[in-house]
Image (cartoon, rainbow, N blue to C red):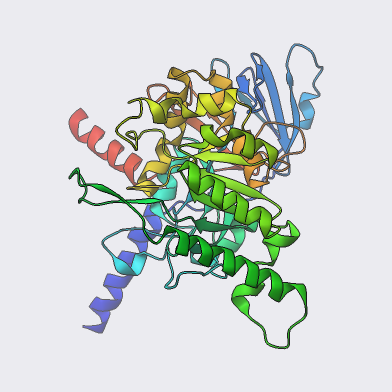
Length: 432
């Protein structure tokens, strides 16, 4: 019986290994991509480009007709004529890698018990071997901000890339910010599709005062040395010295005003709004405090009955025209499997007013700037990480987003997943 048990474990291990892609080795050969249309992520397009990278960093990004190349310096040359090159897409405010199967409790590690838990670090719960990650890479999403859920202050996020053995290997920026779920001014009753009723949140003022008090106590504690260590207050230090960002999950006008007021009064150096459904109403406040907005899921119905049916689709255009730095985020129902649809949400904003290149910025350079990682990723510029991909067509269009090559820090990653294996399997069945 012991032999049979051992054999069963060996078989399961082999199946598991086959299902997971092995992270690529460090870039060894200097690589050159020629003749592609390069979308740099900063609004610029090079029709006939040359892109080179060595040791994981971009060394050339130029128009092929304007420079003289030493081809002997590049061992690996890719002819991408007729194709498109993009910087890797970034998924902010995501729980990918924190939950594998919602119905399996042991695979769900996205939240902790408690109302104020800024000391919770999502990074150490991140599963770099999640099979969902492989599906996101297939559509060009190569980086994400891993964010905890639950409570009023949910914890600390970190930014990772999608080709690593462990969470330590995946780090792009560790402990980049703390996330605050600001209370709403109203509550909606009803279950799922039921219409229900809307009523005011009678505890709103009390809840806001609790947040203000917590920030105030943290600031006072950090102002002077203490013989007794309070790990919760200690973890708030980065908000006051500017090393971390306060991410405010809020959609209503009053929420946004009150949240920003609390941040300013308590000396929080950097703030970002997540959601921002009514951000148009507080544009001057956002501008005055240099606050960017990570807009909530584009593929969503309006939140209020009186809103235009296309309100979520055109919000990115409205805020961009008003001078706000805009990125896209995808939190909500089934958010992990929907990470792969992030580029198509950006594509929807094109149908509602943004140019193709401005829409691209909402999931590349704009998001990188908002997260504070734009010196490393977010656009195809010399000196930045060679995190990019080659697509047969427009990567923001689900009909033509078909990736042939992808690189993370110069490493040539495998573009296979459980889904592509099933596709090949059943394609062969029908060919027979």
